[in-house]
Amino acid sequence: MDKQAEKKMEEKLERRMEKKLAKKRINIKEFFDPVSEAREAATTTLKLMTTALTLVAGLAWNEVIKKVSEIYIAKWFAGAGEVVGLLIYAVVLTVIVVLVVNRLKKISGRIKSKVVVKK
Image 1 (cartoon, rainbow, N blue to C red):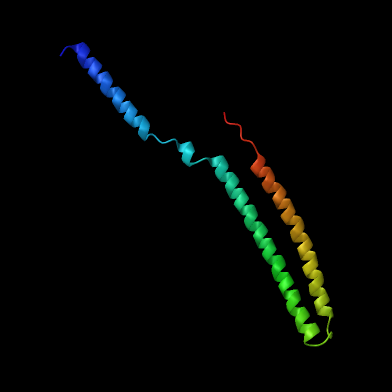
Image 2 (cartoon, helix red, strand yellow; image 1 turned 135 degrees about the vertical axis):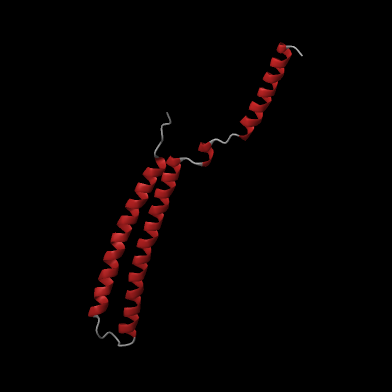
C-alpha cells in the first residue's frame, strides 16, 4: 500500500471512531442544571414551610376543640376563661399563618416565573 492509501484508511478509521465517541458523549446539562435544581429546592422548601405552618394552626385548633368540649360539655359552661384564651390564640395564629402562606405563595410564583438568560 502506498502512503496515500494508508492516510485515507487512517482518516476513515478516525471518522468512524469520532462517530462512535459522539454517540457515547453525554451532555451534562441534560442531567444537571444548577438553576433549575435551585428553583426546585426553593419551591420544595416553601411547600414544606407552608405545610409546617398549617400543621401548627391545625394543632392550635385541636387544642381549642378539646378545651371547648372539656369545659362546655363536661362542666356546662363553667371556667370559660381558659377556652376564650385558647380561641383567641387559635384565631390569631390562623390569621398569621394565612398571611405568611399567602406571602410564601407569592414568593414561590416569583421564583417559578424568573427567566434565566443563558450566555
